[in-house]
View (tube, rainbow, N blue to C red):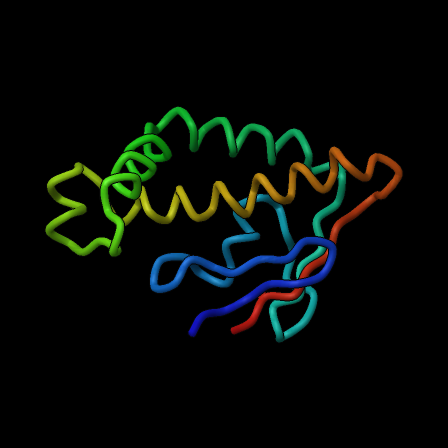
Length: 120
C-alpha cells in the first residue's frame, strides 16, 4: 500500500511518513483536486536552497545510518536508539522528492516547468 506520484517525475511517497503535499515544500502549486502539481523553473534556486537546508540538519545521515542497521524495518524504539525523529524521516523522504525535482530540471534545461500528480 502507498501513494504514488507521476508525471515528469515518478515515485512513491514514503509510507506513513510523507504527505502527498510534500511537493509544496519545493514550490509546487496544487493545480487540481487530485493534487496535480506544477513547478516553474524560476523555483530552481529555492529547490536547491531547500535541499541544502535539509542536508544541514543532519537528518539524512541519521536516517541513512539507521536504515543501514535495520534490515527488517524500523520502529519507534529503533528510531529513538538512533536519534531519529519523525521530522528526520519526513526530511529524508522530502529530500528524495526534491532531489528528483532538481535532477529533472538539470536534465531538461529547455523545459520551463515540471508537472506531476500525487495520489491522495
